[in-house]
Image 1: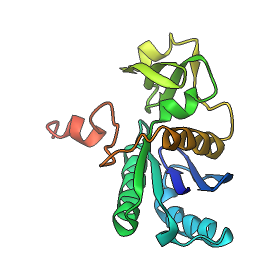
Image 2 (image 1 turned 180 degrees about the vertical axis):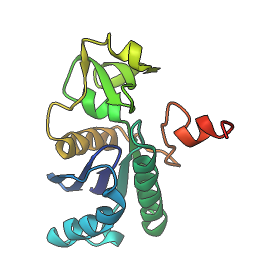
Image 3 (image 1 turned 90 degrees about the vertical axis):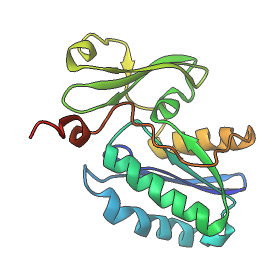
Length: 190
């Protein structure tokens, strides 16, 4: 299997290249607006460094959220284009699955901005129940876990490898937003 996986849902950019039994992982702190400038050049560097061309990919994977609305859109668009161009099978992962990977039971949490949180009860690496928590509600979440056990790209590689082994493919990468964007929430406030 040769798979390219990315996560652009937070202020980190995670890229994992799964080639046979090897995983090549890289996580970069890009801030809030660095994904669009760094994603494709970093993907290109990763592929070249490991002797892989895009037409060799038989799988592509992306974190579909929740997280940054723009980051989700960038990742989903890039991997959708790559899947169309190569015919690669698609694997979708969520931020919650990356945090839950390697843990029996966890309340996985993702920053939703302004003190708000996206949260999910996860067992065995799978999401059982997910919800949006306001800043007031989030302040009471004392058992929330915000980071994977490993580095983000390593957790991405492991989660994608597991989903590939289970043949958990999707036909379309559907963004997992959990709520409307700020623009959509305030469009009638003019």
